[in-house]
Image (cartoon, rainbow, N blue to C red; front, top):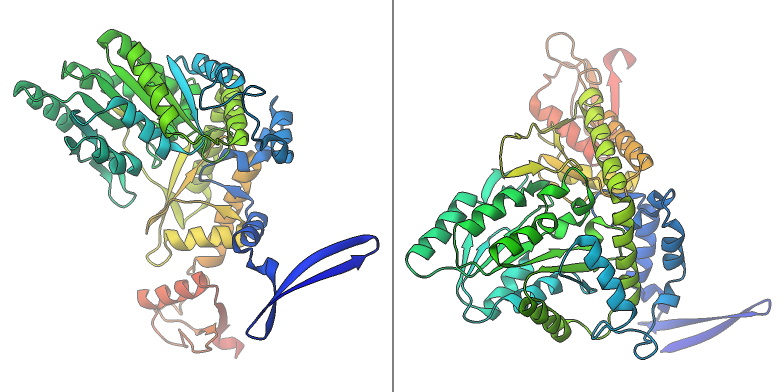
Length: 494
């Protein structure tokens, strides 16, 4: 039964609905499960050390693009339109504003073509594979590429070989391209007359490893003269195209020269919302190649992309490209500075947490200076615990963790305020959750001189004279992690 009630408040009528289910009256708006909970969780979330810089909008306070972003986000409905040609442009067949916008993007990135995609990098990868490959294609692919490529490639061609990545750190699941095996496979296929014509690799990982495309691509291309097409998954690296120190290693920076010199078609995908100030699902598809390659790309984009693209996403994509072009280097420099501040803080102030000493002697990779892995020096306290506490108690979100570590991504949206709040939270966690020898000091014979009682249930973990074992310390730490109240009573206080 549906009950409709109008409530008069002054001259304003409020319309609400109630459902009667099994004799219980329920407000129908309570069934807006996603809407209501997203509102609640947004109020809890102060900062995100994951992706999507645009959600930390305060970081644009000193930007020349501040007004444009606030206008877009505060007037969303004005951008959510269905107006198309002849009054406005269409992503299906752009001839006006969208064409000029993508020409701007092409010039900024230095490509032969840059296309907007409003359905995420999964669709970008699908468009890329469909335009480069056919059922006769022979593909050699790095296994560490996005899942969408693994799903879609077999629908185009069955002749696919995957090269397993080299493991750098098992605990953190950090891997890299096995370049030696990759090149050997290319050469062997060439020598037996069954060469690969298409290569797919990843250039940057969320875990913080950046492949030096300037070093790797040359070795790959020169190892087999039959390579005609290359797809580079650079989803996590749009921001590095604008960083003065890192751009020389990116696919975008190197693709044009390699494409011209070796007569190969190179496509690069960017998940723009991961590192630039654009809305979710904003993606970029870049092309370097001959006229036939560019035409196939446009045709495939027309076939596979939705005919109802999101205008707000396109607007944010356009904004994010210009922002990155004009201010990106300063934003990435700040991100690296804030990341360094966190590292120094952990080294000097904390005992529960420490940094990884990652080696830097690999000639084909470098570590991303904006990614900070922190080790948890405790056999009970783990990455999941820290992640939950940071969000539930401090409103700080991170995505990547393992049993012994947590990862912080310092993107464009991270500010000095975010960094200080994070450092304060980590210090507070250490102070609150790390059981020190001072809290349970012994009587000089490794025995405790009092009671340690978790409540509930009120059953002592330690009693006077009991030996302080590792097992007991683990139980006390676990009680603290679970936010159980702990009562410490010295024997002389009884």
